[in-house]
Amino acid sequence: MTAATPLVHTRSAVAEFTIRDVIEGQTAGQLIVAADDWGWWATLLGGNTIVPTTGIQQAVAVGLVRAGFLVRRNHSYHLTHTGHDVGKNRGFVRCAVRGWEPTFRKLSEAALDEFIPAATEPGEVARACTDIARRRPEIFAGIGAAIAADETPGCTIDLGCADSGRVQALAAIAPHERFLGVDIEAEVIDEATTVLAGLGLTDRVTLLAGSVQPEAEPPAWLARVDRDSVTTAMSFFLLHQLASDGAGIAAVLRGWMEWFPNVRRLVIGDGYLLEADQWTQQPWFSPTYEIYHTITGVQLWTQQEYEAAFAELGWSVTRRMEDHTMLVTTVLERG
Image (cartoon, rainbow, N blue to C red; front, side, top):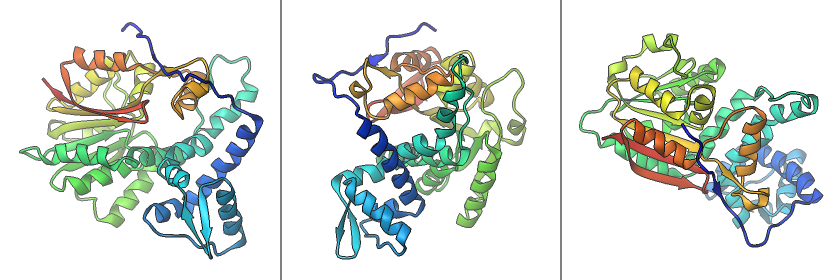
């Protein structure tokens, strides 16, 4: 596959980062994730207020006020407009501040290395991926509606399911569909399975641990699956890495099509490669996404490359949903 020119986003006046942005940004990121671990953002986005009950909580709340994310009224705290944006996008913050931090920390010892093997916090990355995917509920409503509208219910598989948050959301929208989730992180799968049991979903949702990278030999988990029953295959935030490790986007998709001969719908959510001379010329989070993958040796792909692979394999785009420019969910049907 030939490389296509990446999209370039420019602004008439290019801002510069300052040392204040660097230091206070790091502090704000830690406060945002701590507040999320306490459930504050979910509470606030639900239209309720928070009331800190300890000294530590008070310190974090005051910090979030001074950052412009919260406002205090009497003893309770409310979201500001910017705080609402922060709460909706906390998954991206978690990914950078907690999930990818161990990889960035290794840079100091890697000056002579070509790449740094990714060293992530799997649970943090899994939760971040689910938060990112669910920040736009209308996207999942569209996917779920398409699945629910099938004349004959089938099985939907989430390849790289993380903590199963996406599957849980879709199971509520398409109540007659069965779901499979597969992820390489066995501990994440174990924890998610416990959550599913508590929700009473284990009769419709099955989670399995293993790789979803097509290889010469099929993965062991595939022997436990009714492959003919899978009619929808999904993957979010993973295809770029599998394509980089393998032989490109089309090769990965072709492998999945061989695994599931009756698949008639693909849902691919992934980040496009967007470049610019300065970070401030790119959509937010795009620079972090780009440099993380550059230092770990993972290739990112342009919109043209994704669409060329889809067309090569006979898939037609039925819906394309863009999330802050670089993150795109594409629903495809067989022609």
